[in-house]
Length: 86
Image (cartoon, rainbow, N blue to C red; front, side, top):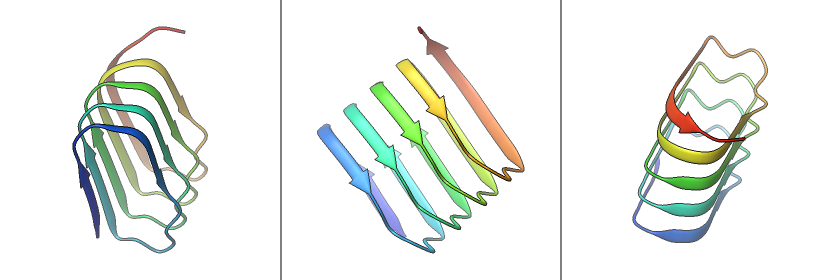
């Protein structure tokens, strides 16, 4: 389990086979490139939020994002409750 809370200019996680990643707070750039992650939860205000996960069972993203991009493959459920401006 990797848990990150607070304000970060750059938050990058390149872990493999992580059961749960939780990120809360304000981030200018939040990038997750995990493989085989069972659950990723991201809450807060992000200027750029990018997720390039593969075989992810659930991704939940809540908050206000200027740009929200999801390039997942084989994702069973994706929930986005955001205000997105492209």
